[in-house]
Length: 124
Image 1 (cartoon, rainbow, N blue to C red):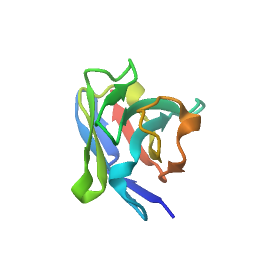
Image 2 (tube, one colour):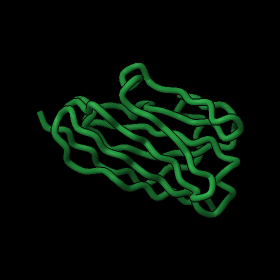
Image 3 (cartoon, rainbow, N blue to C red):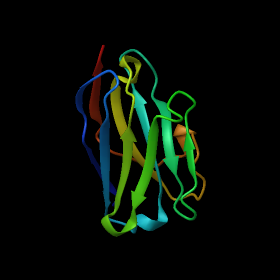
Image 4 (cartoon, rainbow, N blue to C red):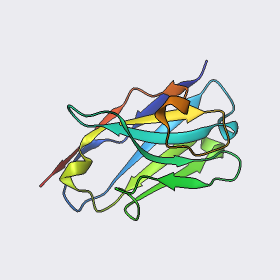
């Protein structure tokens, strides 16, 4: 059974940085494409970033491109999301997710496993 535990959220001022982490257990991490989604109050869960397992190809939402960086450390079974130049509109619960496919897709329905979410709040 795959389990995802994410951490690293918190409160930060606009322009600041945060790094989120997510640890996968129960299966071989290196064979899972990993992603991050977020959900703000009253809004649907939206794609943020993903990194493929086979070639570490990355995919980003336009709203975070150039500010966020997704990376993975297969030795630590961990995926990271480095968030720079944070804006108040980045405030949301951030969810780590995993899928067996090789493509770093932005399609929420193609992800199988989800973490519990971590709150990120950006103050203006």
